[in-house]
Amino acid sequence: MVILSKLEQEYLLRTIESGMDLADLHALFLWAQGPLQALLPHEALLCLQLDGKGEVLRSECLHRTVLDDGALALLKGAAGLRLARCWRTDPAAPGVLDPGVPAGHMAGCLGLLCGTGFDNALVYGSPLLEHGATVFVLLGLPFRPGPRHAYFLQLLLPYLHLGYLRAPARPAQRCRLPARALSAREVAVLACVRNGQSNEEAALALGISALTVKNHLQRIYRVLGVANRAHAVARCLELRLL
Image 1 (cartoon, rainbow, N blue to C red):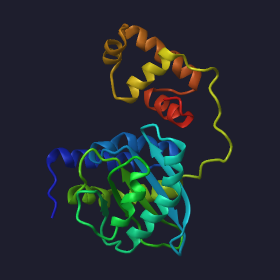
Image 2: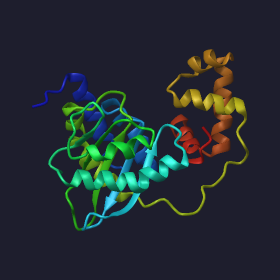
Image 3: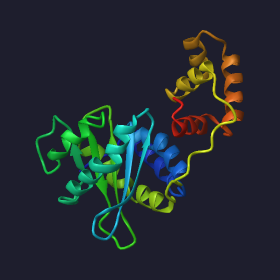
């Protein structure tokens, strides 16, 4: 039995409240990189939709770090399929994939996981359903995942499941490009924002004033067609500018 602390209860409530109306991949990405991180910090979230036979219909990888094309292709292809199939052999509880955990039914996925650049994962999903089952893989946790983290993932599965099924698949066409290329300084400012730094912290790191950072951000918002810091980071990750 897992007993939550008051702080964990507060984080869980915030995560649930903000995850009730997820309707597209952008909203799912912001939720995963915001409230979900408080309970389950991770570098990437692999979302898989399965058909009635357990075959992968589509997959999306929502990541806060830059992943090369090979790692993304492996996650959305062979590694994702293998993780989903291994988890389905024992779907009663989340699967833990970590070199330090005793070998289990998912041990055969460790080699594929290393090829993606991550060394641990937490896997859980819905039962096979006619309208579409789902499996979610949290990758790159900054600690060894255990029963407590598995419990959090179990509690949040309904919100991940519904949020992903509501979200239409990404369009095949290329993303709309920004009005102009970002300068090196603007990219540096965005890198600080992605790392969670305030304007003052970014200014100190870059050797400029906080007002200059703010001005850079306002120009970045106009160039990218976004409204705030979170949207700017999401857009830059989508365009692979960081």
